[in-house]
Length: 199
Image (cartoon, rainbow, N blue to C red; front, side):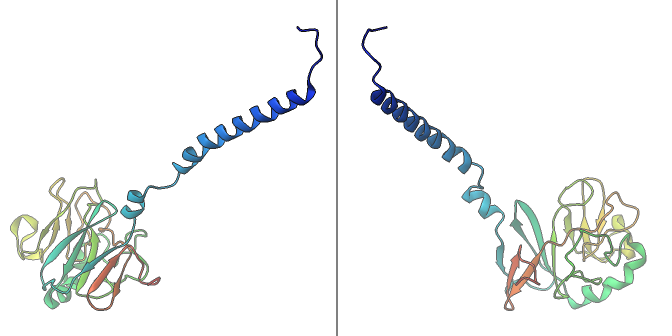
C-alpha cells in the first residue's frame, strides 16, 4: 500500500461510476428478458378473431376456416336438414347440449346456432381430437342406414355426429362437437372468436 492518503473523493466517484455502469447493464439485460414474456405479434394474430364472408356459401355446402390453429367448420344447412334434426334426438347422447363447455350460452336448442341454417363448430372430435369428415349423404349403411341423416364421421375411432355436431350414442366420443364463440357483422360476415353477446 502506498504511503499516500486515500482520496475519498476519487473513491466515491469510482463507486458511483461502477454502480451506474452496473445498473445500466442490469437494465440492458432485464428489458429484453421481460419483453420476451409478452406474446409475439404472430401469437397475438393467432388468437385474433377471424372474419369470413359467407355470402357465397350455398345451402348444403361447408367450408373450413382456421382459428387459433384449429379447423372450424361452417355449414350452411338446408331447411330440410334443420327440420330433420329433432327426429334423431333419441339416438344422441346429449341432444339438448346440456354438458357445459360444448357451446356458448347464447347458442341453444337442437340447431346449436345463432341462425338455424348456419352451423359453426370446431372440426375436432371430442374423443381424441381427430378431424371428423363431413358426410352429408343420407341413409349411408355404415353410419346407421335410414337413421343417418347426414353429419360428421370421425375416421380415427368411428364417432358419429349429426348436422348440429351432436354426438350419437354408442360411439367413443362423449361430448358434442364444440361451438366456438362467434357472431355476425351484418348478414354475410361471420366473426369467429367474438361472442355474439359482446358484438
